[in-house]
Length: 231
Image (cartoon, rainbow, N blue to C red; front, side, top):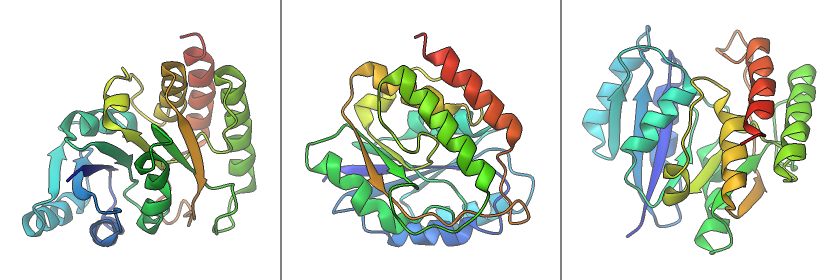
């Protein structure tokens, strides 16, 4: 049986991560065995205790602890190294992205049509209405990324990205934080991988609810679009 490795970077998510793990464990993985690679990025709240309790109860959870907080990109690199599955899916630790969307994300790869699948928040799925300027910034960054990659994505910054394991493990990644998104898209596009995009639902959260990405990350994303466009 083939295995789906679900890589989950976690930092200070004690409010949500327990619910998230239960949803991931219960999600339909289209007949694939599940491996949850949970990377705790040196959380300072009660996150680690929740993760350890879940890992004790569920052998499919592989818990990895970063000794220093290094950011989402660094946590994902560590997760990719630890993943042993045939497919690798990125899952945020909050509840913005719904594991119920796994079947639609996996289908193009399981059908033999794709090597990489991105889940778009802008292709018609239900979504919470928030942050006009975030949406504008996302579209600007996606458009610039498309200009350099010659792709026609609608949501380059999406969390939900699924890869054949050999594709993502062949990519040399550098970014420590949210610059991971434009970097990985540029490098996967350059690799010649077959890329699909599918609609997903999105339940965005406010800063009061724990949202972490800010305007500085948008500026860094712009820098990364330009930097990795040059190869």
